Amino acid sequence: MENINTSDSRRGQIRLSVARVLVYILLIFLSILCLFSFYMLIINATRTNAQLQGGFAALPQGHFLENLKNAWTDASINIPRGLLNSFFVSASTAILTTYFSALTAYGIHAYNFRLKKFLFAFIMAIMVIPTQVSAAGFVQICYKFHITNKYWPLILPGIAAPVVFFYMKQYMESVLPMEIVEAARVDGSGEFRTFNTIILPMLKPALAVQLIFSFVQSWNNYFLPSLLLTKAEMKTVPIMIAQLRSADYSKFDMGKVYMFILLAILPVLIVYIFLSKSIIKGVTAGSVKG
Figure 1: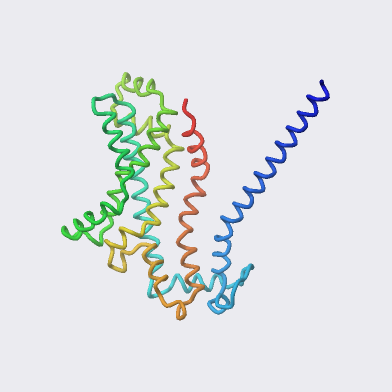
Figure 2: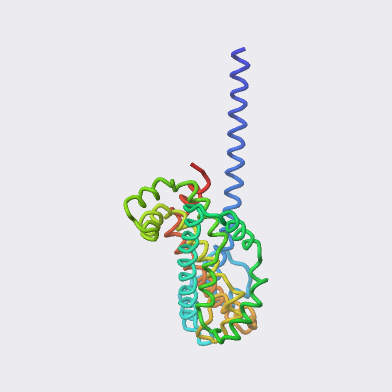
């Protein structure tokens, strides 16, 4: 009987080991698949236009600085100004979106009032409405009131972010006990002071997650900026990349194009690297309810 149990235990361990190996192999394959495009982007950014026309190459070719100089000093597309424009819009949108979504989630979570369930359901209903549905009317209003070629029509609408609100509310339900809020009220702390000095520090992982997601979403946003920004000095990175895609590639320096695309994704990678630990912590903590 003991031999049978030992044999079954060994078989179970072998199956578990095989399953782990298969999972690791799958994860490694998916990681390589995801990183391959980034690797090829870096490789192509080191090649000249003639080398790119010649076909595939798996190793760097040594023209990185040359392409960087050509892209940075291009007269037709002002890359430094485009990066600065995109960073200003994306950072402002991410900060406002995260703060006001957390503030709204705190109001729904910490207060009991008659229309609480209705407001929550209403915000969730807005979440399923595509941006394109309301974009036509919004753009028409912007042109009517002559507020095109300004950044605030791109930044302020980001405050209303149902997805961010929903995540922040779920996170608060898992990590924010109401006893802390009630203790702050007993001590005479005002509601905004309680939120800014007590609640927000407790939400740092969740804030980091939504900051990076909101930043990336705004950075990659092409739809509204392309409709509202027509001046060259106001355009963001996605608009400039679209201009490169519509150019005549037979007469364009492809090495410079790949370098521009690489420069366009660097800010997103830098933000992710600085916030990666908080992002992992926020995702794992927000998935467990206390």
